Amino acid sequence: MLFNQSSKIMIRWRLRVLMAEKKLNNKTLAKETGIHPTTISRLKNMDELKQISGEVLNALCNALECTPNDLIEFTPDFSPDQARSVVELRKSDSPSINKLSTGSEEENIKAVA
Image 1 (spheres, one colour):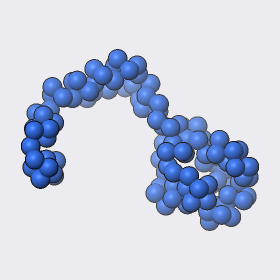
Image 2: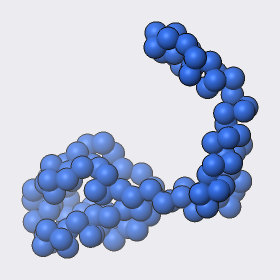
Image 3: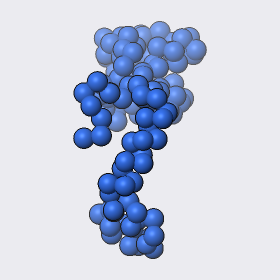
């Protein structure tokens, strides 16, 4: 395993920010998305996103006229140096990664599959 228990990836949820920027309240967003107002309230009050369905994400993006990148912010809780170490470790431990970089596109697709 590349990460220990104390290193977890943070996915920050920005629905509250986008709603404020667009001056939308829970009731209006619920009406525009078809998502129950209680669910909108729960989603709005989350800071860390643990899970969301594609259907709900799609409805929110359509109603807010945004992309998933506007709603979700990735923030690793490790330093850039640690991230580089992980990438280097993955490259050295996985011969398939090196093989992918040297083969043709068709060979790469077969190797990944």
